[in-house]
Length: 439
Ligand SMILES: [Zn+2]
Image (cartoon, rainbow, N blue to C red):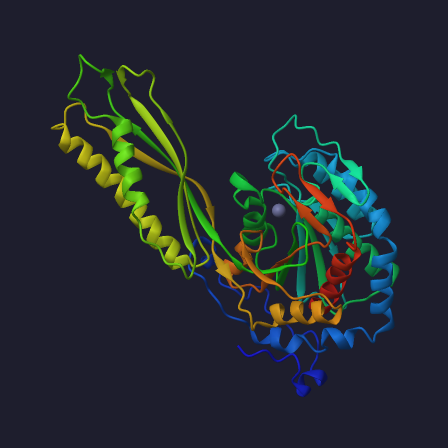
């Protein structure tokens, strides 16, 4: 759909057209097909350009508040980040977010079944309902030292950028809107979500979109990491653990038997030979292998972990199909090679699915995000990535992930840093974008 942001007729249209309670087909939740459609109301709703919004005194006051409060926000970021949030154990940090949501006056603050902390900032109408989120979890296991240290403007600590920054920006947005008494035409639902990283497998988003807020979300933004990028392409992934098994035996005495590690070697060679499209970028990787008991034993077991990615659902499905066929062929070849003596078998367990999708560059939400960046003299950089937005993108709900300002290094490492220099610019952009999309 063509972007209608500047269509003069739009200026006179109501900002909150009535919406049906459920406007996307929930059945698509289980499919991997990208359903790209933009309901009519999204085109109607962006009545004022981001630059025009800057003429509103309340909007200007909110932006000033965002800048003014940045030093305290950074203090808060350090405190939040020193609460551990290992994968699948986000509850302690979640409790603190719940407390802060309540302290900031959000309504109906609750924790859903997955552990997402949800709070509402009602608008004049219930729709459009913008969900504004950041993720609670980190990649770091329990027991990791999460103390944050400082040197000048640079903070160092696990998760300080990804995604303590996002959580902080989200809280700053609420605070700025409150201090400036901004009343939005539509509602904003703030969510501190679980399971964004690794084998968390976007379980927070899946719970939010398929269950706790199913059918109630019109637009989605997540704030993730540092910098000033805008992610509008959601790279999907399928991850497998494949286990090869056979009876095993003595390397000399039982020679002539099929070998699980050798079968796996055949599979890896086939995977290595896959041809995949450069555009949309589609990838495969055998990331970990293991198995065997001794140099002089035919192993009874071997395993490998495989990751495949694409921003295009069909390309991801195609490489996935080739992968499953390669495993089967490798096992068949190995068994034929040894005349089915001590045959091996393989089982591929799907250990991760991150759905693919994208929000087109010319969609109103991406155009608004670019307009907001321009209005604040921020360079518009569009990117692709694997973030919480993958889930709504796959459902065809307008979604983007923005970075939280400042700059960072070493995400997902113990030496992660976040340089707070001018980080208020990221906060301001998030504030203006929230205002622009909640109408
Ligand atoms: Zn992240």
